[in-house]
Length: 370
Image 1 (cartoon, one colour):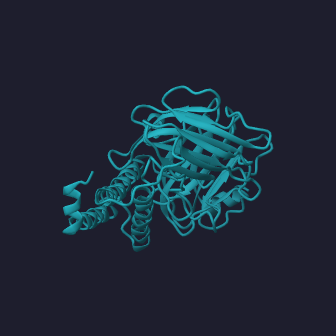
Image 2 (spheres, one colour; image 1 turned 90 degrees about the horizontal axis):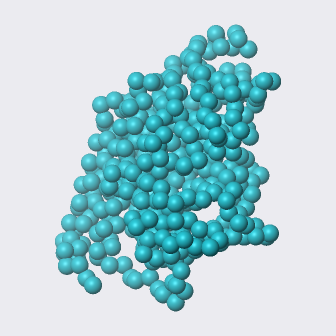
Image 3 (cartoon, helix red, strand yellow; image 1 turned 60 degrees about the vertical axis):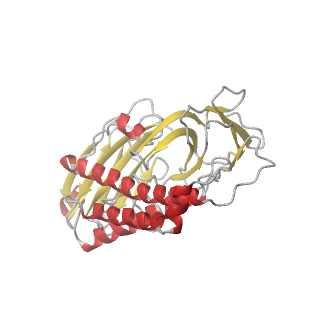
């Protein structure tokens, strides 16, 4: 059934004009009072908006049909948001709780695989409530590494993840210990009973709704994480536990305990983190982000360290050192040309979540302790 209002908005160009106006409003977020105003950080801010836009258009315009969902990566090396984990492969798909779905494929050898249904409201109020969840420890997997998983409101025998009445998306997180040696899970999703159906051609309503959704996603996501960065300023250069309930509200993995904060270093300073106790856990990691809460470029710089890549002290503890130049320690986190930003530590699959110790030092003073 046609939507006369959307048809008119497309015909007279209002749909496109409103899309452009919302993007212009999103640009004002980069000029927020407490955001860094130097050309370097501002350039990264506007690039960040362009990345959010690419992700938003893919999500809201190209892959929005829950009748024919596709698992796609919305955060990767060149689309980043919300302290995206450099050890992760992220995938998601639009779904509708009125239908049942099947995810199938191969488990691969990736260290951690988690699949959760959510109520994705990022473009509305920045929340992403989990309605069902399973990880690879609970999955029944065939001898050849294949498996099938049902998503539905009603309980299903075998591998099953619940959907709630308002569930509208499924998220897949794969966490590597070592990307060079581990093979990611290869998965696909299909609506059960869709075999003989075909997607509808693009409608004016779908275009109008998709453009509005993508632009609103850019604006509200950028505002959400810029506000979050500002909230870290009172604990700058500290790394206490985050508000775990809030982390879950905006899409955090139920198996992860988070530490978030902001950092700033002069050219001759280092930020030292000591984890005196490492709990039994699936994994842990630390990463450095820019002001906009994008992970720094882990393709070319060592901006994160995890359970596998870390060098441990004789007593099993770990020390990490954030600095602009090599401090002489094996667990060096590069700032990659940044003097300010945000940061994140995760305990993943741990029963206990030990606090961390930290301090800022002059590089020369730190090197004198080695």
